[in-house]
Each structure stands twice: as structure tokens, then as C-alpha cells.
Length: 371
Image (cartoon, rainbow, N blue to C red; front, side, top):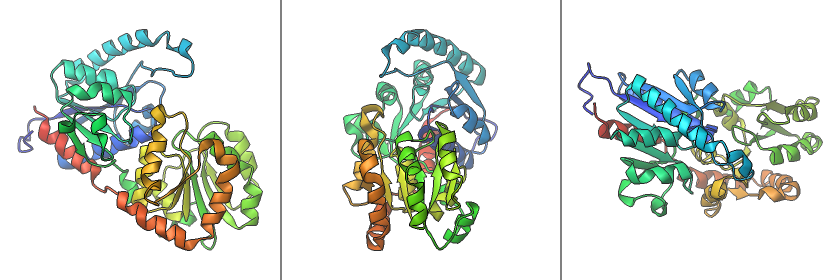
């Protein structure tokens, strides 16, 4: 596309979602597209009832919802309606395309991206996908053969995608993670915490992590006794029990969702986190020591793949989900008492940083799209 045609408008659909790991990179690329081509029109498409229907409008973009669901691996009976949902989503996507008239489509993964990009391909439009994980998701694998370009968060993805179509960009990071003015002291004030105490950020991903949360809940007294303070994002499940456990302790900030993650990372001495691709990318970018607890039911166990890329380079630690009760807190206490080990992880994790992934992806989309 030539950006010297001010009277012409490139129109791009961005599809996908389900978790923050898909949504926030999509927003980052949308912002980069607008920065490079202010005249671009962007429409998001996501799954009705999923968190993108809230987070995308909050970021200032329009989103259309479609009736779609992924394949349920744990309860096959729930897949009975899947063919009907796929067919209905096809007609919904057709209507969206007829109304918006996109010139290109970009998918960030998740089952809602599949019908959108498949329809775009059927119309001969340029299509692009981003795979954030070290183990590719099914929607992206199914789409890859006919896409214009595949952007990946990590190297070595030729086993999933055509090598000639791959561009390793890294994972797009939310701008507020990179661009902020916090010091550790001012960041701690955001959460009402003490600058003189060691601080642990616990984040189970945008949807929470019950196994991690239960261990933290069972150890709130120990954290208090050891003068360790917590910034604890609990997600939306079983919230009353976690709030009840934390309410008597002034060393704990607790919330279902933390909007200002730049402050949370700045305030933390160490992070306990799931290892979704975006969590890994944000931790690398902020240079934080981390104990990863991969979500064991992620498709193809991709969170373990994500974590091990760092663990194998001594850039992070890992505790398996089925071992959190015995190992998580002892591992945390041991590393908090070893400043040298923390500094070593901080130095090594920074080597996994890609600061301009959103811009690189946006440039390629603009270069390979046409009016």
C-alpha cells in the first residue's frame, strides 16, 4: 500500500481473542497501524461473551461479536453444537465483511480468528497471522498455508508453518508496559505498599490461576511474618475466598484485574506467573526475575514450551502446577534471599526482549496490503 494516497483508506479487520495473551497484542498492533497510517480504519472481531468484548472497546476500538466456540477437549458432549456455531459464525462474518469492506485481515489466534481469516482468504484478500506461543495453536496452523505472512514470537517455528512465510517479530507488548515514568517507589505507592519491603507480583494471566491463588491464600500469614508484600491479581474465579484471606493484611494489594501492569512490574522484586506467551514477553521486556507455573491444560502444553525457552537459559525458574503446594513458596523464599540469583535472572531474561514487534508487524501488513 502506498501511504501517499491520502484520499484512499485501508480497512483492516483484526480477529481473535479469548485471553489477554491474544487481545493485548492485537491492540498493540492496531495502535502501531494507526501511528504509521493515521487514515487506516480498524474493526475488531471476537467471540461473543469473551473478554475481548469488554477490553477492545475500553481501548477505544469497535468490535463485532460472532457466535463461535472452540473444541472442548474435556467434555465432548459440549461439542454437539459446534457445527451449528461454525455455520452461524460464517454468515455473521459474511455480513461483517459486506458492511465493513476490509482490504486485509490480521489474526492473533484463538478460535474466533479462524472463520474471519478463512472468509478473507476465500475472497482473495491479504491475510496475516501472529503466533505468540512456542507451540502453534490449531487455528493458526489451519490458516497458515494460505496466509500472506506468518509473524512469530519465537524462532524455530518452521515445524508448524511454511518457512518462506515466517517473519520472527517477537510478541507485541502493550505500550504502557514500555513507556512509563515510574520508579520502584512511586510504583509501590500506586498499590499502597511499603518501599522498604520485598515485593512479589502474583499474576495468573488475565483469567486467573486457581492453583497459584490457593497456595498464596494458604500462606498469607507467613508472608506477613517474613515482611514480604504482595501485589496479587486473582482473576474472576472464587474471588470471595481470596479477598477474605487478604483483607486483614496491609502487606497485600489484591485485585481481580490490574489495569496498570507497568506499575505492577516496576514495583515487583520477583514475579510468579503463568507462562502464556504475552506474560513471558512482558516479563522479559521489564527484566523481571520470575517463577513460572505453566497452565497444565493449555493446548499442546504450550505454556511449558514458553517457560522452558527461558528456564533453559537460566533466565527464569519453573514449578509444575501439580507441585505448587510443595514447591512454590519454598522456591520463592529461597530466591528472595539470593540477590545474586535474582540479578542473574534479570540480566539473562532481557536477552529475550523484542521492543518493536508491534511496529514491525504493522509495517509488513501495510506493505503487503492493497486498496
